[in-house]
Length: 118
Image 1 (cartoon, rainbow, N blue to C red):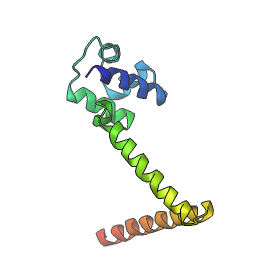
Image 2: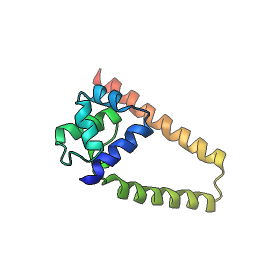
Image 3: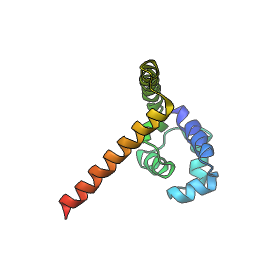
Image 4: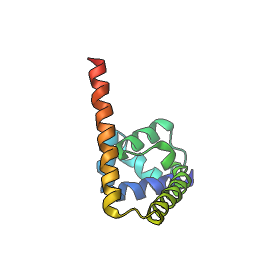
């Protein structure tokens, strides 16, 4: 768990929060958050991690370091898909059109889902 504090600090800074801002938004003690980030307190509770991850808009497992392997694997899969599309002759414009089409289909599905609820 030593890396949890380091990850919290890195992600907090990436998202542009000060220590005080994150503590206030998450509803946790500023001093406790500081202790976690500096590795003075090494065993944060799940409740604390949940509050921090929710405020940072990430999953708890990302704070625990489990997300990195999954992200790397997904990145490799995306790279292979893009390389295959390029080999198949797909242009950037065609890719954008395809992406827009998928967005439209998803939007249409949500609209149909709302109609079914009414």
